[in-house]
Length: 62
Image (cartoon, rainbow, N blue to C red; front, side, top):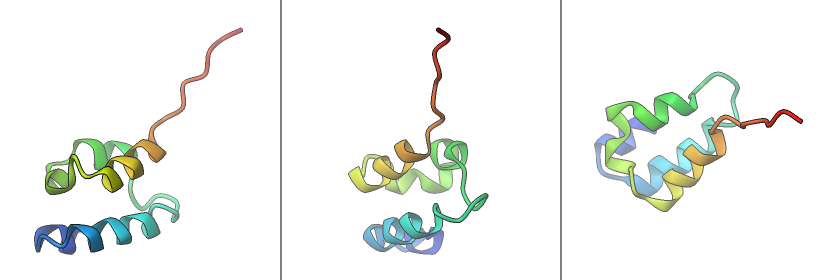
């Protein structure tokens, strides 16, 4: 996915990310959210959807 990002093939990068996030431990929310290597994809709705899907869940105390 990162190679596609570097070459500007954002749709292919997002396709690959959608596949690899299903593999445990491959990519984390923090890495996708903060690492500059993913900057070219920021703002793309597909990328933002993937990042949001990995966001930690906040539980409220009852």
